[in-house]
Every structure is written in C-alpha cells, then in structure tokens.
Length: 287
Image (tube, rainbow, N blue to C red; front, top):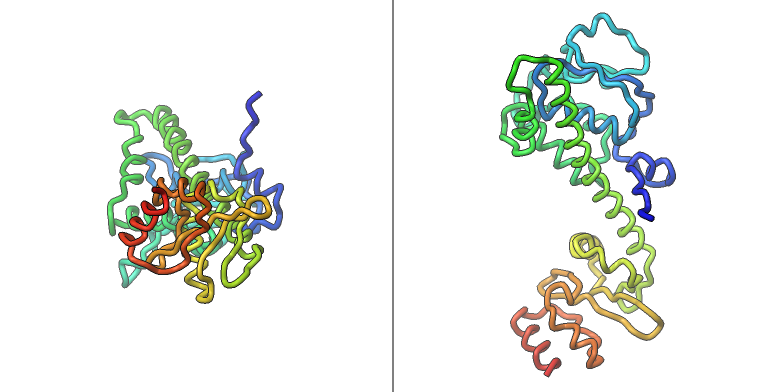
C-alpha cells in the first residue's frame, strides 16, 4: 500500500515548533486577484496562500473589488491599494531604485515571509519581483504567461489559470520543503556531539547529500573551531567528511573509490590539502 504523502500545510499543522515560511496572522477565506491575462505575480500569490495558509481558499478573479467587502480576504495585484494587511497591489507604488521594485507577492513576502530559513522560496519570489517589474526576465514567469489562452474566451482562460496555478503550487512545495529539510538538518548538527573539534553526526542523515554539502559548509563558516565532521554509525565505526580547501563534503560523494578505503580501515583525513594530493593518497590506500 502506497503511503499518502503529507501536504506542506499538514506538516506545519502537525509540527507547531517548525518555523513557518509565512507568519500572516489572519484567516484568509477568499483571495481576490484580477481577471483577464494572468502572470507569475498573481499566480504565485495564489499558490502561497493555498500551500501555506488555506488550501481551501476561494479564488475570485475580478477587477471590481469595490463590490466586495469580505472580512477574511486578501486583494492581491488588483485595486491599486496597499496597506500591509488586506490589500496587496503594487501598480500604484513608485520606486527611485529599480532594484527595490516589488511585485504584489513580493510586498506580501516582505511583510510576512521568513527569508532566513526559506532561502529558496525567497529566491523564487525575488525572481518574480524582477520579472514582474521588468528588471529581468524569468523563465518561470515566461512559462506562466505562456499558459494564457490564445483565444478571447474567459472561461477557457480560467481553466488555463488553474493549470498555471497547479504548476506554481508544485514549485512552492519544493521550495518550502527545501527550507524544512535545512531546518531539520541544522537542528541535528547543532545537537550533535562535538569532540576534538569534530562534529559526530547520526549516520541516517548522510543520504541527504545536497543538504549535507551546503549546510555543513555553512555551519563551519559560522563555527571557526570546527575542523570536520564524522558520521557515527554503530559504536566503533565512523566515516569522516573530508576537508579540502575549506570545502566540506562526504568523501563518497566526491570520490567513489573512497568506499575501498573504508574496507581497508582507513579512518579519514582531516586537513586542508591539495585535491590532487588527496586523490593520489586515496589511490595508494586502495591498492
């Protein structure tokens, strides 16, 4: 039986201690965005709300916002109003510095987003800012715009909007999951045993290779006394992460031949040395 994958919304609901990407404190039952042609800005705004605040939010596409006065609603990218709470349009704002220009979702992220723990999501929204304000074209933004219906049929364009929205939801899910994994791994690193400036990590996290290379390096940059890392599995066996020119990574990722080194009981190298010298050393130990 295939296990059901939990949604991002469910993960945050279960773990109340997990920092949320968006700390918007109000209930959102309805999201109003403009009708007609859609863009990365309004589609990404809708995706953030559905993934992180309310999966069942009702989305109404209209430009006649004066006819609506819902209490638990956000008006995004429409109305030429911005109050940091309910209205998030950017078209009426003027900036002297083009690099400070914001899309509607960028304004929302500036007010309520966690830029520290969710850097990939922050990059996605920054990409949207640049694309929507004309500073730099975005591939994702271009793909979203390409989803617009080529014919003048609003019903068909609504269907295309939800097609683009589903695509954007997957991108937001991926970006948020990246941040969750980083938070969990950094917590494990911070709680791990340190001996002789070597951090001993649980062996079961070594498979998350992308995060290991990125976040161990980040941890070492912040903790100058740390020389290296070791994966601790069972009581007597360890695997070191080799340190070469201040770049930390699991040895088996960089050099496949290292597995033979483990078989010959070589423990590891904890020094900044020339990579070529290191490779030769590995070959010598494997022979």
